[in-house]
Length: 221
Length: 240
Ligand SMILES: Nc1ncnc2c1ncn2[C@@H]1O[C@H](COP(=O)(O)OP(=O)(O)OP(=O)(O)O)[C@@H](O)[C@H]1O
Ligand SMILES: [Mg+2]
Image (tube, each protein chain N blue to C red):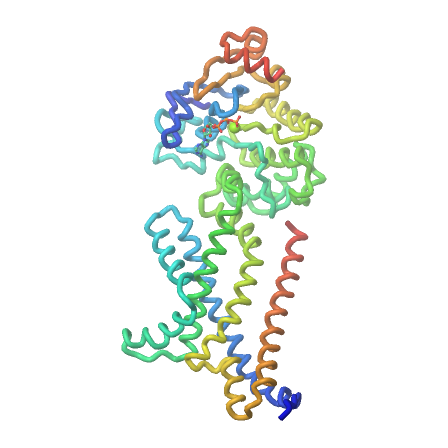
């Protein structure tokens, strides 16, 4: 019994997969929005002058980076509701998981790029009379942000791919949609290739976009 | 103008300044020399409180820099600082480097700040570089922008920490010229430098530091032709 590849199956599955793709993109965007706020916040706490706040941020960052994202997702969807006494919508759980997870990595990106700015920059800012906050805002932040862009873009790609783990809690994102199609037509080969291509198109586009932004920013240093 | 009494500065167990007494009057140009690690930079940085002092007092234009009631951001505009590594803001043009403080600290409007900023760039000979980013400026040009940036705050004194030692020899002159001009206009200046020519021509007084102490101070003629201390003699022999 030979294997006959049916490209028509690929084309037929595209419209349904696009619905899953839409959710993948939405979860990534909302998740990363949370992640960016959490990451910027805890990254800055990590370099603050207050030892307690540094510790606090450290606990968050280490516990996320030290555990598998799969466990984090399970904990949020199945674990937390037991403690809270209420169910969580799987989509919400997914967004929360991506947010909490990416936040810890973004925190390290933020911390690293802030610390990579030469101390002389802050000193120059302070010595023309800018306050600590003004120095951060006008001098350090714009330079740090620029250095963050490649790593943030990389995290964008990682988080986008991480959404496929949400299949375990039944979120109807791209991977889950692929699974459902296969359950009815049994064409695993064609469907998984199509799913993979869709991820690839997205990740490559993000990479391209990043390249463009980086080049653009280099003109005005 | 600047009064330093029994200034002691430690970094942990390391004693960097061991009791400095120094008074700098209005319009005076003081050059500080001394071997590496003797505490010259630290002394300057204590004057505008980039470093907290361990004990003693530093008074700038009547304000005790360590007093909790003193607005430290204000002191820093009173005593401008120029660094060895320039420390220009790389994401801002030459003009924006100069006007940032005018707009954010002095609260001037942007057009007003731009007019003042251009005047200052002209003063340091860089009127045509207003829109250039630091990466496209030579070392000497960068340092002149940095001087203009400090001057924009109308400081009562200027602190220079080896302003020419990161420069190629042929670019040193243009920066020293700007500094000479400032001294002619009556600016109070404290300059850490090993440029003997500048010291001879411009300084009212040369201070020699060694291991956290001022070991000798005198007019440039006297200290260069007839140094009293062995360490001063040895050091001068080396840089000549
Ligand atoms: N932030 C710091 N923490 C710890 N030690 C420091 C710090 N800054 C300076 N030191 C030490 O203090 C001493 C004096 O340093 P300082 O920079 O004032 O010397 P300097 O006379 O300016 O030397 P140079 O000619 O090399 O610039 C040195 O031993 C230096 O290692
Ligand atoms: Mg020094």
